[in-house]
Length: 439
Image (cartoon, rainbow, N blue to C red; front, side, top):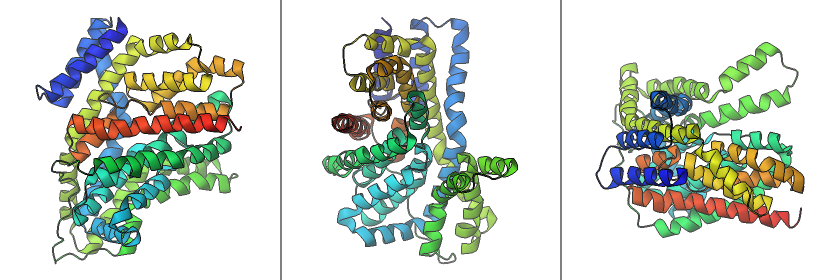
């Protein structure tokens, strides 16, 4: 009965948004409240479930998304995005720009959390798309596929690291095996699959649209453009690597690195630097730079509300216990642990929307079985990571980030983003099972 309620709730959500044209956030609230009531959550607890769902997801993402939007808007308005686009197209050519974006996404995705990587790299996608009249989904999906794979497969991302600890896997070996699986996965889910999306058109996207820079402002050079736009990546790498290079650093120094290395702080420091390098240094006043930031916040408000709505729905699923009920049902099946773990993680992802929640919940279910069968722990981590990327749809904040930034219909988002994630999950499982034959 619980699974039937979930299916009806998701169907209601889709119908409200796509057929009745109800605002996505309001649709999420309505479907979540109805699901909570039908799943037996006490009426007096529902307001708290809603508040917790909004807070749990926006607490992690709001500052990062807002600061990232500010950076992206300034990168576009200053002419830095155009400069980056020129260099990338010059290196790879318009015919192979997908591969250049894919490689960039994978390199950036290894140290960078998915949400930050998405916000950081989307302006570059639209810069290339606008300037060279290329379809944004066609050239952008390979980069986002690379980010998604890194998020699900590779340490130091939270889910793989936590899974490695649970299963006693070796982080170094998991990283190496993950890269081996990731390369063909990204190629198939990125450039190969996106060939089918050449004719997919995005709606009008204003957030990162390149505009002609007034002659009263100077355009930043190549070094300034690249350095400022990618500064968050290098800051994260530095604060991550230094503790390993200097393990004997004092407690105070370590605390400072923990503060500076937090993703939100990295983005804040980047904004401070970018305000000078792409703003004041190029002839803009502080008031003009702040106006650019204010426009970015207005543009991002609707996206934050939609992400908040997906958080409500996810929390209803978790609070009701449906995800654990589903996992317990799957545990009784006679299937190889690597495949079973992948399946459980995939179905949980469909229910709760969060890859991290899906992977860690599935790990708790499959852990005793994995221990008893002696399955390779490194491959189990990768199997769960691949499964957790499966079935991304309307209850996943990543789905809505992609939809809203690219201004697509739900149908086209399912056809592009959701299928890409399914390909990533399937290719990941194929890679895990192939390696299992030799390890």
